[in-house]
Length: 291
Ligand code: ADP
Ligand code: MG
Image 1 (cartoon, rainbow, N blue to C red):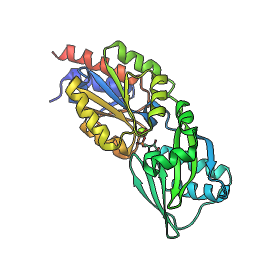
Image 2 (cartoon, protein in one colour; image 1 turned 30 degrees about the vertical axis):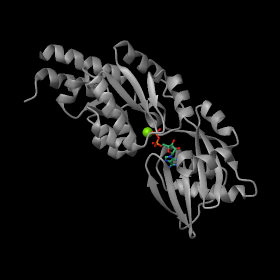
Image 3 (cartoon, helix red, strand yellow; image 1 turned 180 degrees about the horizontal axis):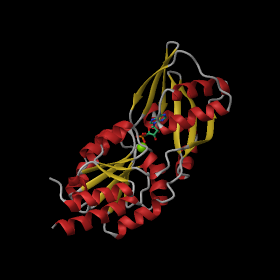
Image 4 (cartoon, protein in one colour; image 1 turned 45 degrees about the vertical axis):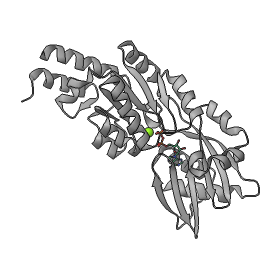
């Protein structure tokens, strides 16, 4: 049976937008020594916007954008939603008969009219070709905290789109409060090194690992648990689900994808990162009453 103090703390949490799927998660939260954060949609708003578009010389801009926009229209990834919206605003039409496969943490593979395309990060489309195509822009865009996405077919890179996401307004305050209560903050992201560093500095995160595949996030979590004991992971995407399941406590953003919400032990209903230090304090108070 559940203790009255636990019950009251759970309902307290719920009133403040923190949903605990069981008393044990609330109990163990105060012993968390490190929290791993996903970047896109967790530390950031997850509503990136396209800031730059470079099309290969000699290609028709609107045709290339139609292809890119159509491929991304078939994915629900925040980057995909932004690129599709940009293409639509630019008047690019949707193509018929495009089929995609989702490669979590990397991008998409698409088939259209007997050709295969790839959309995604440099490492996924071919790092060298991507670097040559970008002609120095890759590092500059990364230092601006922008994520760069490429489109390629079997002839090489066709286009580059850069996207800028914004840090959640409460992120700096929330991370500061966590540090003040002795919790180490770590960012695990599929994004590239430069972009990861720029966002980590802006947010004030203690350490980060870039270019993570879903399984890299899991491996990093296991290492963190060796170093810190109880570790929480917070994320929003399909690609975070394995890490959420691995962590001592999995936490999902309230407007995250279904799989993340199902896998998590705790849900931040209001997507407010300041609920993390709040929940840790709530757990500490409850444990003092229970013991
Ligand atoms: P994060 O860990 O920051 O949430 P993801 O693991 O979802 O990021 O994605 C990692 C990288 O893979 C992105 O930065 C992007 O370059 C690429 N990517 C993933 N999905 C897509 C997509 N649908 N369209 C374009 N790029 C994608
Ligand atoms: Mg995410």
